[in-house]
Length: 210
Image 1 (tube, helix red, strand yellow):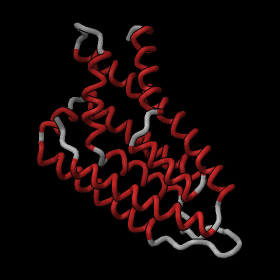
Image 2 (cartoon, rainbow, N blue to C red; image 1 turned 30 degrees about the vertical axis):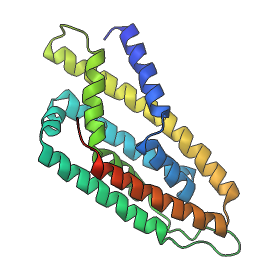
Image 3 (cartoon, rainbow, N blue to C red; image 1 turned 90 degrees about the vertical axis):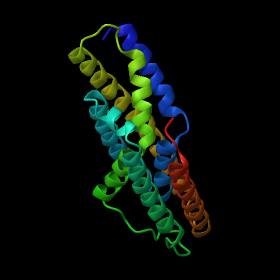
């Protein structure tokens, strides 16, 4: 893959990573609720999801899935159900006492990582996005094996940009939330998070692949 083409893709990936979207919003919410470390672990899960989508796109599986409306609907429903589950948990989450200590259940690293990968893998928009973006940067006339290698390179590049940007979001949101945390603020944060999770679930269900 020519360096100038790769550099163009890297810039595009960075800009797309900082643009508001479901994944970075998800990281922001998890960081605000559970702290910066939690946001970084969720980000690692999301990046694993990005890697899965890269492999699917590179081997042509993504195109098959995108063409199967029934399978896409199943993935959408699973993703929406998971987001509604998170919304229910956030709405009913306990708040701390007068000392301002968080009463949210302490999630393990595995649970946080799992949230990130489920959020990304069950988002059919990511599949369509990869299928729409990657071909624009493929060298014309490349062989099938060369195309696969280029898509893997782009996938790793996109993953690296996502990791840097989302980890920064997690650190900033988590640090700010820790400084502002109080029972009243925590309650508002939980309820707002629940509403946003529910809206993301609704968006997932209503989204149609063009």
